[in-house]
Image (tube, rainbow, N blue to C red; front, side, top):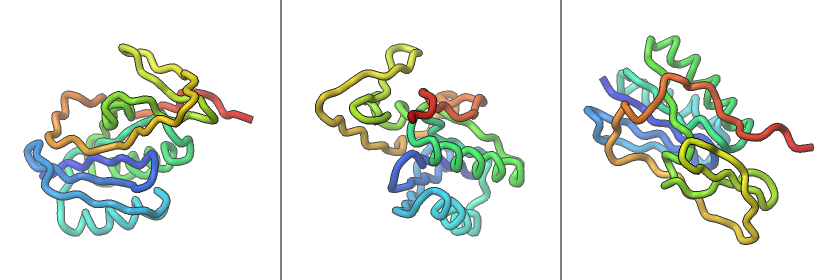
Length: 150
C-alpha cells in the first residue's frame, strides 16, 4: 500500500508517491488541476494501490483548492482511502503565500492572516522527503482564508 501527497495550489501540479514514509516517485503536470489530476491519477492508479491521500488544503487559488478537494474526496470514497490535509505552509517552509494584489497569507503560530508586501515573495512548494502522517489532519475541508474579492 502506498500514500499520495498532492500539491495542486499552483502549476505545476505535483503528486508524490510514498512507501513506508519514503518518497518513491514524483509526478508533475503543467496543466490546470481539473485536467491534470484525472490524468495523473489514471497513471498512478495503474501502478499503485493507495492507502492515504494527503493534500495542501490552502490558502491559495479558490478554484484550485475546490477542484483538488472535490477530486480527492471523491477518489478517497471510491478507493476507501483516508483523505488527510495540511495547510499550504507545510509545503513551502512557512513562507508567505500570494493572496491578491500585494496581500500575502502569512502564518504565525496557528493563525493565518494577510499581510501587505511591497516586493513579491517567492513561495515554491515542495514534497516532503519523508512523509509522517501524524503531521496531517482528518479535517480535510478546504481553507480559503479570505472571502471573494470584487
